[in-house]
Length: 141
Image 1 (tube, rainbow, N blue to C red):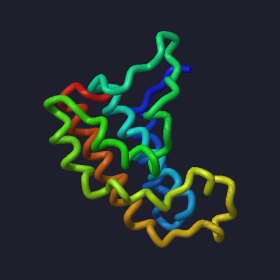
Image 2 (image 1 turned 180 degrees about the vertical axis):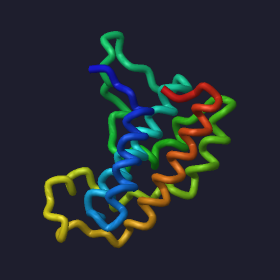
Image 3 (image 1 turned 135 degrees about the horizontal axis):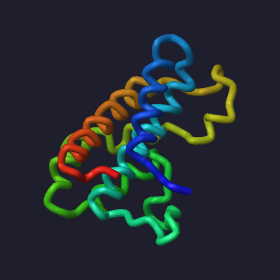
Image 4 (image 1 turned 120 degrees about the horizontal axis):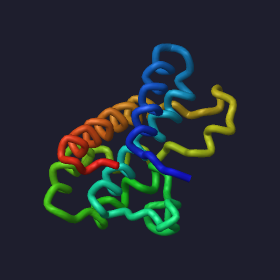
């Protein structure tokens, strides 16, 4: 499989923005989480923190996580001269997705707890900004 975290992040974010217009907040919440996850993974890949396997597959290990488990480990794994500028954008969001759950995709929308929806949306917006900055530095993949 060919991973394209950058374009996947853009696609999920665009979908989330559409769904956020009163179409389906439960689905928008899900897409914002996926957009943020792909944005972070794009920057990790673009900066060399994450390397795909020779066959293009995603390796098992510390980065094979969804956003609620990925953001909290970033302070321990970030390095390099550009990371501080990227981290500054999303630092406030490290715990934002702690209540987001990938398994919500299996639930009826009325069963999805949307109390943290504004935090998830804002965190995805900032992750998108981080991706844009990384892309301007040639550090997004």
